[in-house]
Length: 379
Ligand SMILES: [Zn+2]
Image 1 (cartoon, rainbow, N blue to C red):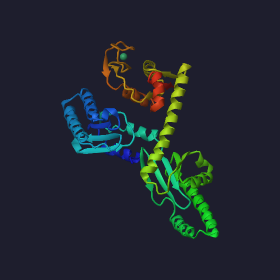
Image 2: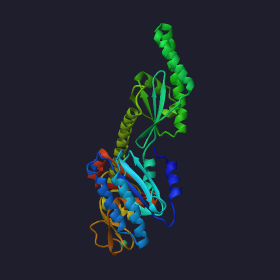
Image 3: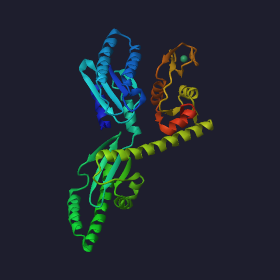
Image 4: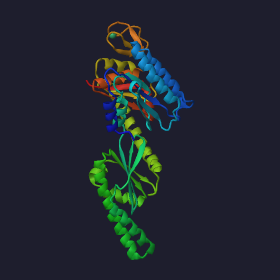
């Protein structure tokens, strides 16, 4: 599981003024059509070629060729196990960091003195950290789900509780009324303890949302026992056996996350379209959004998954425009083509303190109807 601290240490270790490095974000998801025949290798080649065209000195070309060669070789022998690959490479000092992620990223290659970590940091902002409490009347397990991966915390609930669980198990063998009553009493004691511990763990491990999982009788009791302040973070209750494997817990948690994200995306796009209709604080469509960006008014850029228009950039004032322009709309200077207009726009939005959001599924389809892209505006 990649953590923010690791990215920070990556920046510290890898940034060297005057020593450029290659940063790569590559969609390697073999479930997607373009990647069926390892299409990501061709995508990488195209991105590297586009970068190469911008290089100045011979020294830079030589350094770039070495990094590009290494990365291409690595990707050629890559066995995708997740949805995307992130890699940073600098051959001169043998620096190579790579990681496959179980979340999608936009294809992008970057050549600069520091590792280009913005997309990685955006992933941390965009994805919520889920705590999953899997409990029955005698046992409890805790999982963290983040960026499509799962980790089980061993010993999250105290050992006292485990010993207690065993004694309840023995009691049950007898099945006498007195023992049953005691078992119920123990179950309540146990779930109270789990609820209290969960509240502490949720704060310590910075869970954005909480999921309860287990047999229904245990989860409904646990839900009732949760402190009020934690209940607002409760994202769902899932029915699962206490012996569920981490893979089963992950798959159930990701489904809840997917539904929540879909709901959030739809809300965002509906709000964007409604606001744009009033022609005050939002715009939709590429031309209008570019125009707002030129005026530094964009604070939240929203675009549909899969939308990847080309564009052009003024060689004089750096304004970004749709690809059909022959001269700059603003100063009439010459323009040069930009392969990845969304990335150029995103860079500019972030530079003026705004945020960039890609929407998926039904929300993407809705935004497509409204021109694929739009933005909430500052004034
Ligand atoms: Zn211009």
